Length: 357
Image: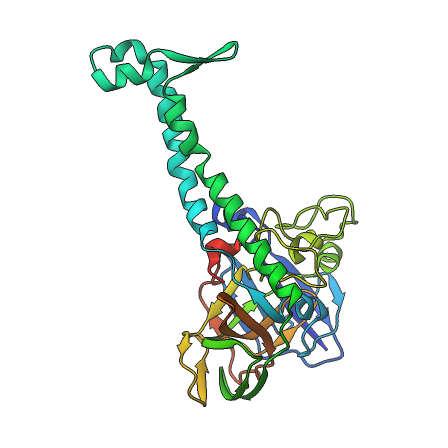
């Protein structure tokens, strides 16, 4: 069966990019499976994910053959299923310090440049004039005040990464078995009927969320009639030559550091954020049954293709050996009967410490 998919997926640094500068990728999707109920999330002038019926004006669009299924795709099962360690809160604190410390360094350089004009200002004249000799070189006095503050975010980030690595090694040495969960899945909501956790695990909260995963790189290249090795699809990067732990970087769809340092293990232990995501309220308490409602705006049900992968999942927050963990598992949400239209595509930061995944 034929349907039309239109997507303008946000790149890694989407906060600094005008959506109109990126063209919309439009394809006719050919599949043996019935397409889902039509939906449109976003707008033609912004970030967009749309799946609709074929129209007469669509005959010239490129044709792509793909499986359309509700079974969770392998790359999502590999990267968004199982136990994950919460990144250290110091990562977020360190990133917030970057802007003020850079401003302080620039200010100190400016004050040093106008030092002769500050002769009548007691404290500033003492700071900006004169230097200390270390070895054969002289260093301005102000540098000894501002430079330690400037490198403070780097030091904090090193400490946070070290603590994350220790937590990951702790888990690797004593991996947890999956919890036993019994769910009742409704129309945009999930009810937890049964929960059994491994020993020493304390449940704290739960929620469900829905998002759109990164499109398949090969399909996007085919849609644009571009060979691999030339210009990458809009919003994607050149694939890295070696296998990496981060899923987006591995496929050339992510740029930069989406997660803190990950330990070499059979799978990723730090959850990579979904750039397009909406979630329900966090439910606290463990008195069963626990009802988890989805986002206020009704989203389409679970559906996957090589271009649009609309993914639902449940997050269970726990504490184990003083560490904050979460168990993530896909949820197959039924399709809606009515067409879904959401005005804005909900975006989140691509870095885990900023998105609060």
